[in-house]
Image 1 (cartoon, rainbow, N blue to C red):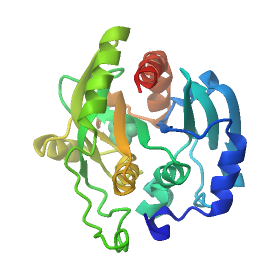
Image 2: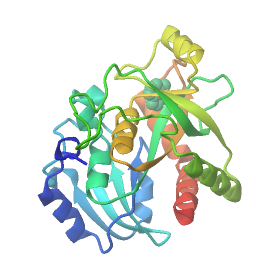
Image 3: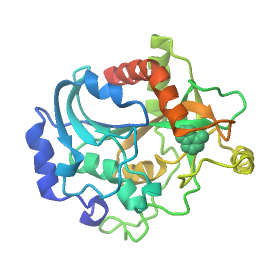
Length: 272
Ligand code: HPA
């Protein structure tokens, strides 16, 4: 894969390699309020994002700490991204895809992305967990813009089965084993940072979205371009465009459901 899409200098790869006891196989991006998983990493070594040259400079949002945590979960060498970069912070889609680029550069073959979302489908309620089956990119841009593709290849990365069907069935098995209810759904990714208007929610529902959020899409596109398998889990923190919606409500709902989502992610990692 080309330098251009990775955009991660050797110094960062070396920093990660030196901190980890074993090279990470799986990257896990932690969404709003889900940072607790980082506390469960064995042999954890944390690298503050600020110590990595390739981290895009963007103001961090409350609830999004910023460190890369290396170690093991269920015997699997992992790298956890505690804090992600959103396009609404004023960065490009390429920058927002930094966790995927960093994970790929460090040698991960699988990316697990978690996020908080607003429920669009009428049968979804706060606390529900959605296994992302597909997405609709409504951000108006793409992290591969300007990329000529890999040497000898093209930038036209197929997005069919971007959310790996085998990983989804493995996640369903893990969910059944943990007695954590999950259902599959389509994630609409918007730029933000405003929450959606009721008309926008009606629109994304009509075009096939079940949940809506402001992250994930750039990371997943870049991960696919870099050949990683992707699993996406979305925690519904609120009804999209619901009354009284606030960032505090989203963070609190994330914390309330975090135990279930954490258990599910660990059960999934155990099966990888
Ligand atoms: N909309 C967009 N992003 C979100 C929401 C929402 O309702 N809830 C959590 N992230």
